[in-house]
Image 1 (cartoon, rainbow, N blue to C red):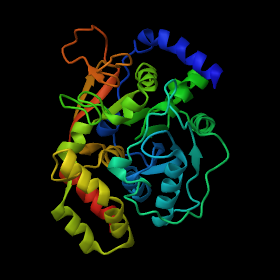
Image 2: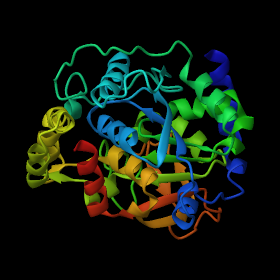
Image 3: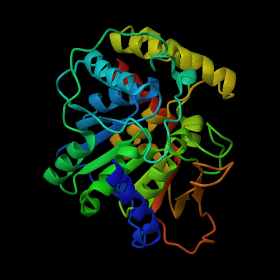
Length: 349
């Protein structure tokens, strides 16, 4: 790991030149192309708690994508618990032993472990449900090595759907820089567009956890699409009426969804001024499944603040081009709430 950290510092010094080509977002391409005959391949990189579990359910039910692997990254709750949550969600959805789960980095690249978000997700990340241990166990192969192996086996075909911190993705790019052109794209849940943060006034959780990792990824040259906290607030909130509709479905998955969101529903209402629970990871994954859910995609130059006393983890979007850099990120600025919710209802039924 110390060698990897030295490589990280060297990479940080060269990030400014890495984004010179201004790649077109893979998601933007998907929206303008006819669906491929086969399903698109994804790696779902997750710090599995309540909303990540909903994202896994969507991904496993989707006819348009194939989940090649689930990789676990530092984030919402205790690391081993995140893995258990992912594995149990696969089991509940009827997919135990069908998708491998790999353990990645249990800490940020350079910083000490930040704590967790149990105040949003409950002590176990699943609203204090404390489900039994899953039947399936994590694979022995390290997540980063598995990601390299899969991307090399399917060049230009795999999209990384990153719904946690970007630590695993940054390590992938540091461990094998030549792999960047082989990645079809990265769709990342993080940042905001003309909105506020959810962990500080300006930063969102997934970048704040490991801003150095985000900076590497944003400057890697890989086509990146971000789906921000703002999109989730505007277009993914499940109100009490939505939960009533979920309850009427009466399925095991509907009951699972309601159970794991008990703590989140209360937190979002009492602390985030919402009229229900928002689902940023789920809507990010939904956009990969059906790119037409993304209603507004904006190519922008983006960077990440790593040093600011008050602004650590802020995603800076150069809206007016003052930094005179070509776009390196496609920012999703609006999404179709109705399409997202209907997809969620179908998955739960």
